[in-house]
Length: 131
Image 1 (tube, rainbow, N blue to C red):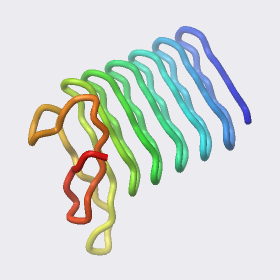
Image 2: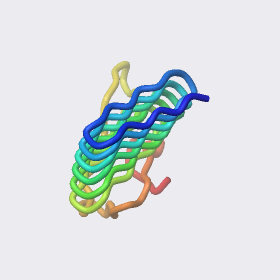
Image 3: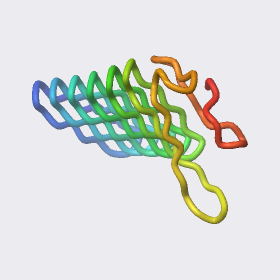
């Protein structure tokens, strides 16, 4: 297993089964089965089955079956069968397949019963439910 760490304003990138951690204003990218963590205002991206976490105002993206988590006002995006959570004022996006095309379901924390810091997934009807 690989591990990569970067300081303030750093970039951390790692390959298959790795872990990447970046500091404030950083970017962290990990391969399949990896974990990517970025500080405030950062971006964390991870491959399939991974976990991506970003600080406040950050963006976290996880692939199929992955988990994306962000803080206040952040955007968490997960692939098919993925889970997403966001803090106050955040947005969650989960990708799904329907009627022969890929679609996304967008939810806004604080609206339609979506609570902050709560992981959500899509049910068979394409609606957000607690994961």
